[in-house]
Length: 557
Image (cartoon, rainbow, N blue to C red; front, side, top):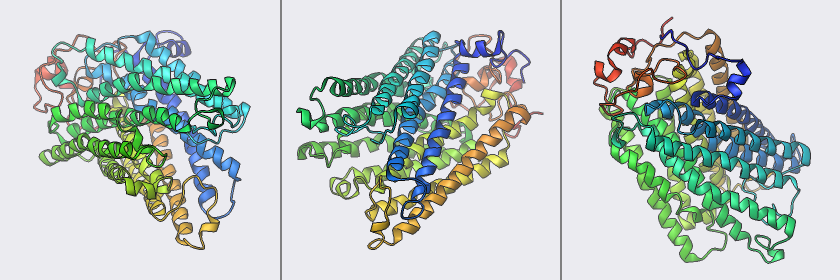
């Protein structure tokens, strides 16, 4: 363990040093604290929704409160948690370390991005608390959103403002990857997490302005009565759907591409093996980013768009499964050729592989026109969405946090508790959402406050909803256990070794644990690929080789 000053030690006043920091690592932690708070809030709304649906009839809230709860759950989780989480937390902390840079290209802009994100979040929450109800759903579909309470404008303003944080972060990462790589860090030596963040940044910069423009148009319609989306004013509500999904489907890949990058790193490290098909995985990230702009219409098969448009969007939906399948097959090949080490981060990687594959296959299913017409606006879509977003993006984030936790904090967490929590999360998640596949396939509509009148024909709905609610409580218990042992590790956790996982990317081989304020004491010279496990002194920079822990050396007292 290095005895030099780490980035966690303040050289000025504690609060000032954090709120005015330009250190990418500290900004990543600022994002982590904010997003954890929003995740807790969004999770509370989710539990309220599931509590209401645990039994038929009105249980804990009326229909207006129910509509507000699922709207706020969606808005908070999508715009304040899943979209910014991995780029904001791990992208900020890990990316410069992995390419051998001392910081991101624009440190001041990086801090400004966090403040803009917080401003947007506060505006969204204040609109809910001060102005009144928002019950449009997280998609803000018109004409309802252009006619309902003024609080909708607060939330859409928040989305507009938070979008600038996403754009600035993306610009920062693109320039950082292009201009600040260490000597010898060619494109073919970039860690796959960097490739994924780079592809994500391209989507952030190109897609996010569309949602901003859409929110401005919604404002103009509300205040100036211009007929843009409202048919009563001569507008077209389907136009709003085109604008919204042209952003929101690429936004799915803002959420999932960084997750895939995390899984690639975990597969390499915990299989003790060069990642199979490195070039194919790297380029498939760029291919997914590109194709993500071409498939938005598969959300609109029942909107009245032309038949030829639906056929084209259906074909493109099948096409985007190819680069995704490339990743999955290469991850499996990496494990097959390697020696799998089942530590907590790898358990989450395997969990991701299982859950995201289900989400991906069901996405192909609803890409079939005839199937989508039957399943549209049912709980099948809710389940598919959560298997991709939570089973993919958030599970990968949790796995990545466990992997880089020693690097971030300098402490190890309790491995047994971590594995128990992983089991609770896996069981709870599948009990919550797999039952919703069954509900949806049998015709249970989503966004219903009550299903009592449906029980005469579908009596099984009551048991399936109850099982889903119980699963949500188990899932919440697993997530709270993660929070508890994470907080405990900060105070009582064993000090981490220099490289507790025996990883071979630069953040583990050339930086202290936790890193210094400037990351590296000398510029790394990259001479090998990011997953070359044939370790030698030149990989670790000579005198630092002795500081690298073996796989068995999980922590040092």
